[in-house]
Amino acid sequence: MLYELKIFIIHELIHILLGLILFLSLSRIIKKYRLLFWAFLVSIFLDIDHLFDYFIALGAKLDINAMVTGSYFDTNTHTYIPLHSWELAVIMIILGWIKRRKNVGKFLIATGVGIFTHLLVDQTWYQPIWNVYFLISRFAHNFIPSYLW
Image (cartoon, rainbow, N blue to C red; front, top):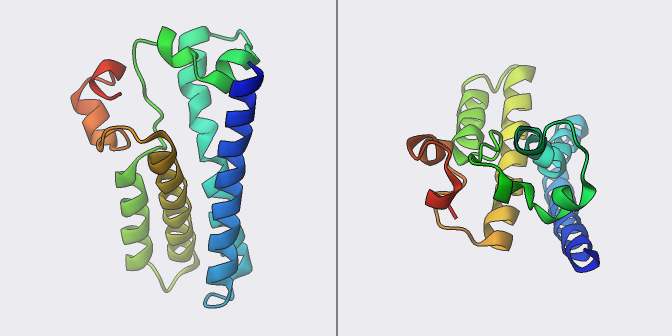
């Protein structure tokens, strides 16, 4: 458990570090610090959707070990993680670009960039097969993990 906790902390620190790099590099170009901070928060807290899969697998039982190690994926017959989706990132950025003159457009772009940054870390860290973080692919395989991992 201690080893898994260290790995979990390192992974989350990488999310924070890349989010900070994104925030600091874009702050020179974009002076909307609230939007940059939002993208930073999204890039860190996107993993909140793991709670969806966790509670489906284990119910209301709180098992920190299962949460940190991801062992709840082993007991779950389906893997949803709905926010972990390249399509969602692209859709947010495209919709934001369409509405870029309005605050909602800037908010959508920041959200899409945050999701993209998070997925980039996860794709590099876990090195799954290429289609794992495509919601369409998970849907096409009925969200069954054996097709994805």
